[in-house]
Length: 185
Image (cartoon, rainbow, N blue to C red; front, side, top):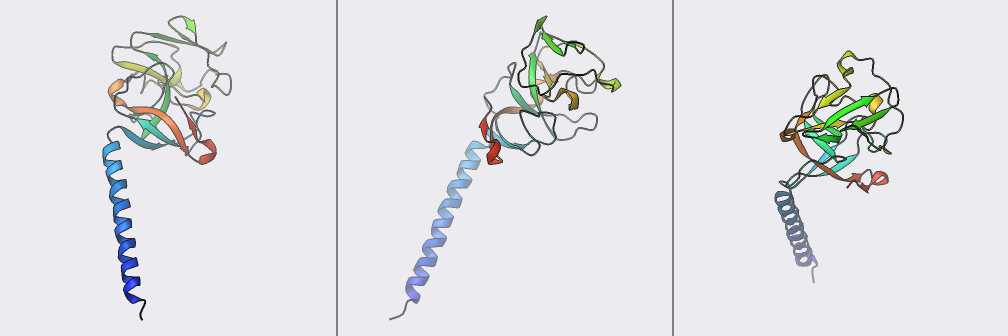
């Protein structure tokens, strides 16, 4: 007796199993892509909340930005290119003021509790970051990095308040590296 027919059957079964798994995975990706997306954090502007190279799962569909959300937007400005990860600190119609002397962010005249900041804000020396008060136009949001002393964000004259249409989605989960895996909100 020969084992060759069994080997052929086993190989064919393995190929069939692989094709079934691949097809199912492809179907999941095609169905979920309009609703979710994976983005890699590039830089340290969100430290300590997010680290450089963290992998994020975004919610794309059915999302309206709210104060406190971490979002990913697409708008090149200054030397920043590609997806930008920031925190929404104010939405349309609100006013934002930053008091660098006390390291305090005010929205509509009220101080904002920001336990996610790793250090006190210092007044930036970059001339493009000198403004300290903004009123957010209709359909726009104001975004800041959690690492305020190392972040190009809505304070920068080339970015300013961001049109909501430029937001790709809300960060929901860090899934890689596994040591950073956590729900974001």
